[in-house]
Length: 203
Image (cartoon, rainbow, N blue to C red):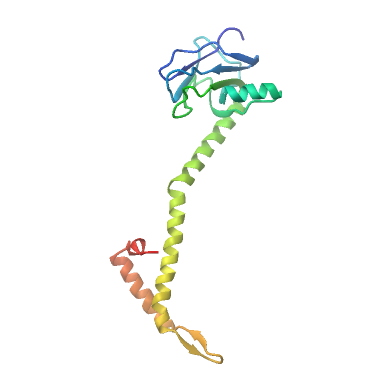
């Protein structure tokens, strides 16, 4: 392939078509301008550019610092996979940060097998879904459930202690089953009349 293949537009910035460097015939690095602030970029195939059959372009994010350090250490920079473009999806927008201005970011575009890029996209989607679930209602729900369970037990304990007595050799402490049934009936009635009373209860 010869000539520019991809276009990159940081939000509010001019179009970039020429890569800063090309580590291989199928991989390209584009330095993002450290001028005006931006948080999103658009990457697209230039008109009349057709990728090899069964291939797609994987889009990565790295920094000038990582690229420089990797070059000096003769190693591979630390790339973060953003997504991909290819036949049927010739362009995509990516969020790269709250303010990429002056941060020395670089976009890496690598032509890879469509199967490989598809797998990476599935992994990225699963990771985002998992992260959203953990940081969203899932974590809060499990915490609330644990607190409510503790408060129910405390409520039962406070009610039943007044009914405790001793029985048998050694004076084993016991609570009549009827006392537990009374507590459950009163607890259930209160939950029906005021479902949120446990949430208001002080720790």
